[in-house]
Length: 420
Image (tube, rainbow, N blue to C red):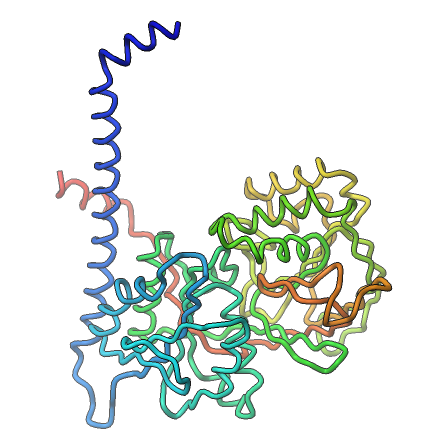
């Protein structure tokens, strides 16, 4: 058999190699055509705005850009230059960096260490810019929001527009602002720039997380404890697997950490200021509080949730429902096939406007400093402890893309016929 295969290879290897090269080249050219088409469409829309005559009292919008150079994709500053420079300039947007002492010549600031974005936002002079552009993942966005919400002029911050360009691994919050079906980097970055140019804005809720020490952290999408916290912690040092680091973290936590994954806590919640508090003990494998519908990576949490509805979905998997690693893998598979977390038969869930969580810590745990079972907050692992989480409805202003409406089929058919 091996000899026959060798004979066939010697006879047809040129055809095989040539076909593979032709396929690869054709696929590359097709993708390049789609990218250039998207760029052209976005730039044409920006030109329409940029060509409008400014009033004597108007000036170009001044944009502060902050980038996490380690998020998701490599070379984010270069991507900024390739994908955002043209639409911003065509739309008469000035982009530059303010208030920090490290900036490249293109006016884009790269964060150098964890937590630096909070410091940057606390120092930022809002009188010297008109908007903030965050290029990175949920972690960088969470730092920016926390820094802004801790400012003494917080009331002013609530109306200060923020643009989020999602290039992280999961970018859970991205679905709230990126409504176009195209998931390419060109589409995400270019259409985010278009939203800035067209000044399409919307209000979003913020999760205010106050720990027992009185410190406040702010998040936009999710809070969790249990297996989700362990998986997030394992994923933090797995940047070398890039887009797959959360899957890597989940598999590593499932296989190498002690079994079963259990989080014991007391949960109190209420739905509205006038509602009574409901208290229940938790013995869970995973607990998730989410103000968004999508987990990122195509995984749904609660399809009924919206970022501006003033609510948070509290969902948990009881430890009794996850009796083995096989059961955990089964849940992961169903999530990957489109089943929402709240729709799993094993899941218990409620809706609330605020909740309090008191996790049971071990003798070796130090609350808010080092705990065996960490919290998951917007894709970042943080030491656990007693917390009070409250939804601040429509608290911040974001540039959002208009809801994508597909063109009528007859128009699509007409365009196809013209090309033919």
